[in-house]
Length: 380
Ligand code: AMP
Image 1 (cartoon, rainbow, N blue to C red):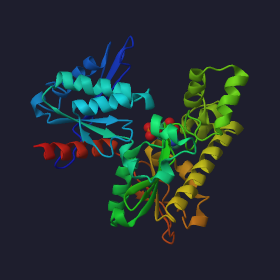
Image 2 (image 1 turned 180 degrees about the horizontal axis):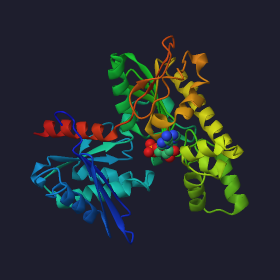
Image 3 (image 1 turned 180 degrees about the vertical axis):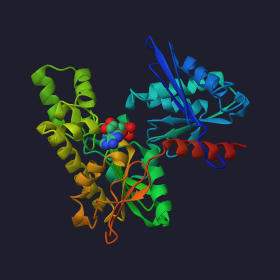
């Protein structure tokens, strides 16, 4: 942590399926292991084995691990910052399962697997929702009966908080201006997309809501739609709640509009080859991001800097151009030459642009590592 060096990174996929995959990268090398990985305990054990392996490992023994940081998607209203995982915290996470049925159960399984295999190692939870806990009630409440909030926790929570927090700190560092002096709109545009208004270091509004479904249309998620469409189509097509949920999460967004792909690279190519629906999907995406920027600028009574991050934000040169061409009214002027950049910190606005535009690659892992280090040092 002293010099924040990445010693290794990896991924375990297809847990519980016939053949699992572990990918391990260290220095400029890569090893892929294909074998059945029946559950998360086996997955965590495999990760530890490879981290301590004599040929491709990066630490000599498990004793070198002081702590484990976990990304947890939903912390509800209980967690406004990262926290040491205790029995009470596990209980609170269980209570959030209802609100994130897809994400929280695997998070809990991952934490339990690490606790079982490394019983004496500190575990820390870093929540996607925590950064947005500073939103005022007028921003997080929905116009539904108040009991929905009080009894069922229906409110805007927001997601990608770890990424929004990282980018806000990083752009302030790059600009040499304290984050407490900046009004930032961060556009996290990837498979899932959300924008956040970060006023003087604090999230004051964001486009995702009770779940990661609303906001701008995404790879396969519909984003904001008239809620009455849901009931109308369920009735007309005889869809169950589960089927409707799958349609909104997996079959909508730019995939649903284009019928081509959820991947923005494929869409760009199809649009260039004259596919009208791919072009429409991209036009809708750019337009919805522009509108969200306008709304979030209103939330902060102005904006000083707009940042682009995640897969599309960092790499989609045409997508950034499509979005920024409509922002001149705000005083944000894209420099097309500077915009010819991928995957690194870069200023992409003109010198006379009053609102600065930046590409800032996100780094959620470093935030999780920093929070984990800070919490460990407080407990020692
Ligand atoms: P993420 O969810 O942040 O990993 O972002 C993944 C998405 O980034 C992919 O679905 C792609 O659509 C998009 N992406 C990656 N590279 C590029 C690129 N060069 N141009 C446009 N989009 C890209």
